[in-house]
Length: 129
View: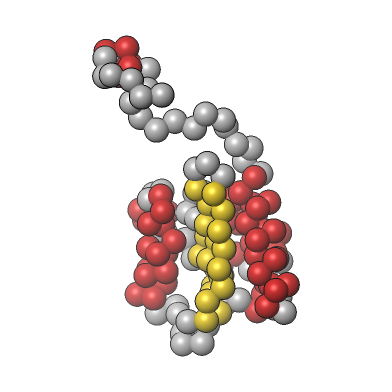
């Protein structure tokens, strides 16, 4: 709820964004895997047909678990959180730009974008570069 700023509000950090519920750590890899599999099914592709995966840069373990679930080598998931930390909704385009700048992307590559955010918002897309 919105409250006037007071010393108590500041001490309790009630002026900052808080998640009301703690989500289980398995949730992102489970949902990311399901979304990737759904896209593959709809496109008639296998996960390994994709050249690169750009996944919400929340933590390395969740991304690696997703890649393992898909049976795809972890190196196909470009990660930048070691350079920038968690950057919220900017993390996927930042990873894409970093992969491009490092010469990893080629015209015609098949890319998978998988994102999630607070409030259980999930999205995924396939793009041919």
